[in-house]
Length: 137
Image 1 (cartoon, rainbow, N blue to C red):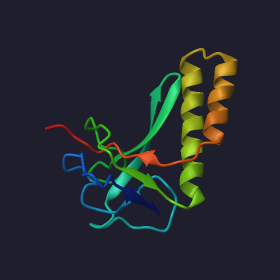
Image 2: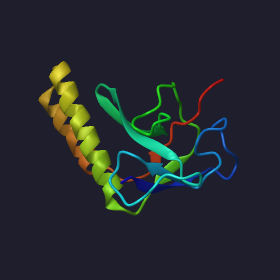
Image 3: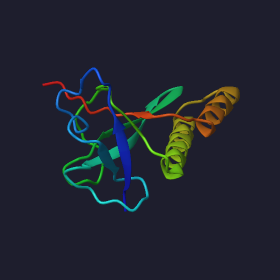
Image 4: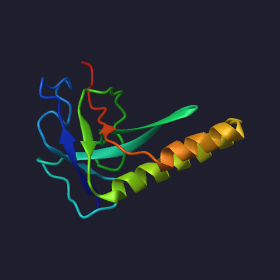
């Protein structure tokens, strides 16, 4: 079952160009464990780790139509963020980022000190996560 997260928007306006977060105050993260079901008021989204060596950026993107993975469209940050008081989101973020780091370490020879610094940053991460749902026409 997916988890619900809350969308926070800039009071000056929405810059998502009609992205999934533009008309709702909640999203349903399909790849995070929780008791939620996607709906029109909380559409499906995906927690995604972008591997940008040496940094690993965690973002939220729209789901594919089946709800089984992230969209194939190129997206960018539209100004909205998500946060939740539930520790499962933070734990999933940390696990996904550490896993991405492991995969990157298999593909690239990272300095051991740099790898430890990234792991430490991930384990102490606090704060909201960007929603990357702006799709240019």
